[in-house]
Length: 103
Picture 1 (cartoon, rainbow, N blue to C red):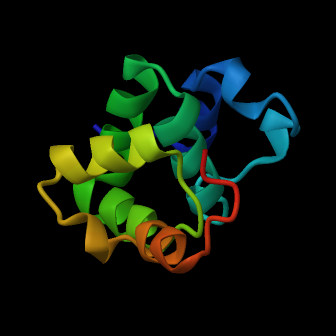
Picture 2: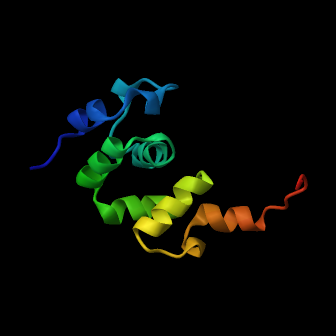
């Protein structure tokens, strides 16, 4: 059973989109934004819904190309899909960025 774009967006938690109009999001054209929000702020129900709607391959492909991702979310997605951290763009970018305020 395929979920429609509109019902997918409506089913996601409202707190994920506190700064945008949820009704104007499109599941396909905004998938990077939606997936990053689910990874960083989503509930288990949001995660399961995204897996059902997008599938593992698309979620992993999008996650690998994100410029930034919370470290907890990054390690979660790495562990769930059993992918090395170095395959994620946000991890590589973070490693190459100088850390001037290391306390």
